[in-house]
Image (tube, rainbow, N blue to C red):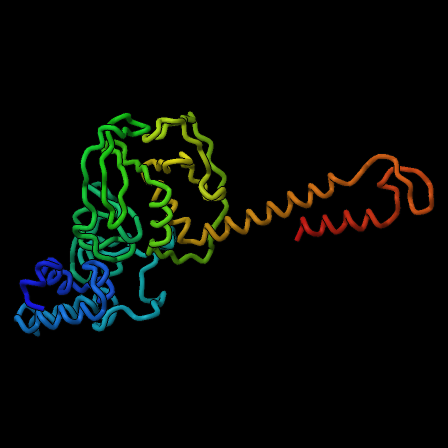
Length: 334
């Protein structure tokens, strides 16, 4: 594989930049769409051409050690004691310049000395890996520490697709491999159902939390405003995502979901904490309770003949019915 051929398949300069800054082999393969053997061949060719020198390898080893604690790259099984966990959120924060773990209150990264600002006052983008908001000018996501440079691209203005809130034309946006529509004014997203399902499956967000997921009722809003789907213009339904997340989203059954600013991030946090699994368990419990209540209501309550031939109400027909009701109560309280 000659260098001219390499240029046809990947951006060599970008590859060398990520390689030297300490991107792991997995990150390089994903970023440049390479298999393991292709990555080995690319590195071998660049070494032969003198583009990767011993000095380059040494700098990469130093940056790998900064990011992952070892010059060989990330361990196969990450351990909690090697990351800085924010106790309030359970999130691991990383320096956007080098990807090293940092504390929320730190002014500078102790590894690369870059200034840290987690106020998010500047331009932000959504990470293509974990979909958290992170600084647009950073090299690495502040949440998952994976490379983000050049992976979020602005698309064309969609004149025929207006923001449900602001009524201004939305803009196409490419977040990694996912195509979404974003409002340039309010920062909301409209995401097709299939795309959002793939985003959930591919999210690399990790949250360390000893408390797990808490059920949240949707907070009552001062003024509820129903909005229209930007595709078909029909009124969308408002739902508490997964019933227990506490995040109200607007859903068009035929086209997709509208997320107000910050809601995608909240939902991805909910999913990373195991929220979908807990929602499924809650649904099963609810269905079991409804089925049990239906069985109770189906019991006849008119005059019946008991085992002794006497007529009377069914609740007085002996211990069999009481035992049945008792079993229902035990099911509901299990």
